[in-house]
Structures are given as C-alpha cells and as structure tokens.
Picture 1 (cartoon, one colour):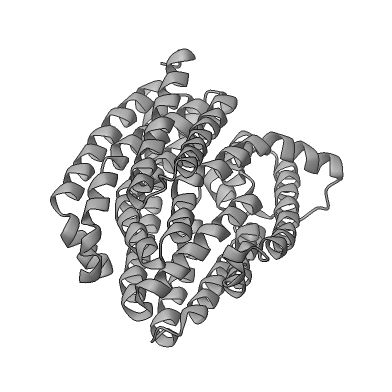
Picture 2 (cartoon, one colour; picture 1 turned 60 degrees about the horizontal axis):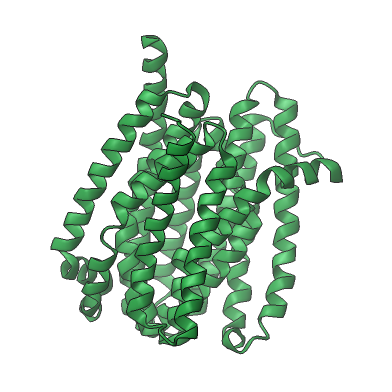
Length: 412
C-alpha cells in the first residue's frame, strides 16, 4: 500500500511539475501580452480582440467536443492496447476535423447578423486556430502521463507568439497582424503535437467507419454539451458587455477576470496532474487532502485580490484600468469556489463513474445563468454590474450542485 501511494505521489508530482512550468509560462506570456496589447492597441481595439475571441471560443469548444475532458480517460484505461489507442485516436482526429469544417459553415451564416457583420474578417481569421485544436493531442499526453511533451511544444509555440507580437505589432492598426500570429502559434502546436504522437508513440492514422465515429460521439457528447454551456460564465458575459455597452468595458472586465483566473490556474493544473492517478487508484485519502488544501489556498488568493486590486490592474492593464478595481473585488471569491468545483468535478464525479452528474452540474448551472440573463433582459436590468455579479453567482451555483451530487452519491 505504501509503495503504491509513494509511486502515485511521485507520478502526481512529476505531472504537476511540468504542468506548473507550462501554466506559469502561459501566465507570463498571457499577461505580458495583455499589458503590451492594451497599451499598443488601446482599450477599444483590445476590447474588439477579446470580444471576437469570446465568440470564437464557442467554435473551439465545438471542435474539441469534450475530448479534452473525456478522451484522457480512454487513454488511461487502454494503455496496454496500441491498436485500440490508434483506432480511438484516429476517430477523435476525424471527428474534430469534420467539426472544424462545419464551424466555418456555421460562422458564414452567423456573420450576417448585424452584431457580427462588422467583425467578420477577424472572426474568420481567428477561427483558423481550430486547425491547431484539431491536431494538438493534449488529452493523449495527459492520459499516458507524459505532460512534459505538451510543455515543450506549448512553450515553443508561445515564444513564437511573443516574439512575433513584439516585432510586428507596434501600433493600434496592427490588430489583424496579432490575430494572424495567434493562428500561426496554434498551428505550430497542432503540427508538433501530431508529429510527436507519430514519433514517440508510433501512432498510425486509420480511416474509421461511421459506426466507430458515432460510438465516440455518443460517449463524448454530454461532456461537449456541459463544456459548451459552461462557456456562458466567461465568454457570454464578455459578449453581452460588448453588445450592451462598449469595448472599453469589455477590456476592463476581461483584464479583471484574467487577474482572478490566474489564481484559478493552480487548481486546474492540480486536477490535470492528479486525474490519471486518481482514475487508476481511486484513492480517496489523497482526494480529501486535495479538497481541503485547495480551498484554503483559494481563500489566500481571495485575500490578496481584495488587498491589492488597484496595483494588480495597474500592473497588467495600465493606470487607465484602475477604475475597474471594484470589478476585481466582486470577482475575488472565485478562486476558493473554483478550487472545490474542479476537484469535485473531474477528479471525483468523473473518476468514480458519475459522468452524467458531472455534465448535469455544468448544464444546470449554465441554464440558470441563461435564465437569469433572460429575466434581466425582460425587466431591462442588463447592467454592467449585474453581469459582473452574475459571473460570480454562476460559479457558486456550479459548486453547490457538485457538492450536492457528491453528497448524494456518498462518494466519501
């Protein structure tokens, strides 16, 4: 038992180490780019970038179709069968490519809407990021517990993005150039990820039949639906702020939210690092400790956000964004809430076979968000501050629902 625990802890530590390098590198890149772009492009153009990205992320989730959550479980459970891994991986690549092509067709029809028509060029170019999403197998690397490979690839691609931005994005007219650089960076990740799969894991692509494709879709569609609806928390909020207010408000909310989400990243890393080990060992002792430690660390982050809101916004967005410090304070309880949500989600409900409840938690909380938005719209109460408070309440809904399911199923 001790030897098993020691081995599990070692694997978790190794995975967590690479995820830490990967995520903190991404944090550094993201906030360097935010600080640089807000100052170079201006708050309005940066708001346009954020607003169009909030739309494209729905297509990206559509392309991924829940595989980034669920496919790792396929890999963990079938490590010993290379033939099966090739078959299931080929099916996932095929499905994602079909969904990518479908996304362009959907965007064509959506681009005729008045709200989107002015930004159609940005949207079409940004959707090309989907090619990288099709071919970058982060779920495979997670399943075989080789996250260092994903780390190397991501670091290289993001270094290209930073270097390209510094060289080519120098004034407020260079927004489209930056979007092209984002697309190329994602393409680099996709190509290198696919080549690594071939060279390191002897992957061979097979043309799979419609029956296999439908079986995989049937297994994954609930994860897609839950993940798709969960985007409402961040991206629909950004979309609604841009729709009802201005791109300057979008920039203020987005930078404040990004500061908060930095505090969430350690918990996301933790769940990804722990998931393969918990899925294999079903070790509840480790799980209980993770829940307590994560929540306490989340409370520390909340305290920091409340003490230094102006300083953090000034650092990452410039003095012009200090006026949004109240937004940062309102969103500050998110870290401990999300810490519990993450661990109780994939590492608890999914690991112990309650996939339905995991997805229901996402769907119910997202539908509650949409219902409240509709009520606000009907009563003409869609204000900037109501949308900010709703963003916080949505995460609270999700946490409470998952606690309920874990208690109901007597997992502990």
